[in-house]
Image 1 (tube, rainbow, N blue to C red):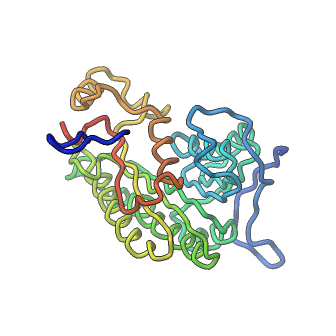
Image 2: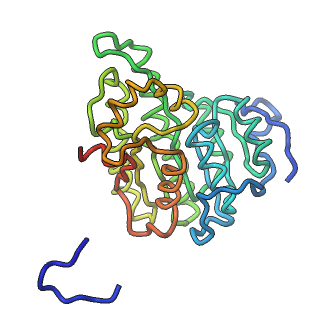
Length: 291
């Protein structure tokens, strides 16, 4: 921000086989984890001064796209990362790409399984709630199944996982950071996005309440709100030039976000570089909301 006119100027490990988590039976362990370590993969997203070395982190929806990139980036920075996905094949390939990551195969829509598995995998100091579904239907055609699945994953799972992790943080007496991955769709109505827009708007408000109530425990909560992101799926969904042009024309920077744009924003909000930031939404939208 510039100075007001007339104001004074001032100087400026080895790979282990993947096993899905299952509810424990008699004589069985309550969960499992792969051997901790660091990723060999380099990433321009990583900054050594962000201070993640040795910190425990949980990333949901880590099988693909943004969540996968966040998990790899945190591991590269020295964090001990647990990557959660409901797709075993994605976790298999992630474990091969980045052996230090601890994979956890789990459907977050299952409340009881989540309570047991996430509780056993912790405690954590950092949490990225990235898992989400986007079922696009015209308002008059929205189905009960689409609504329930979206609420289960986009809102209920965030609340529940955050409860489990925050209780662990409080019990351990450690300061923590939570980043919830929202969307520009939380702020702007989009055709055929009635359910998605609604769940992301609810996520933004949930994050603000979490920030207010968890702040006294030294736990910060923020959201990142991206525009269209060029993940593999994003490139497929927005490959039609006519469709993409209509959206890009509303973005002052004239382009969609790359995965690293979102990853870097998440890393900033997780790090002590944002130590006085909580209850905020960081727009990664190229100016979409101001156009």
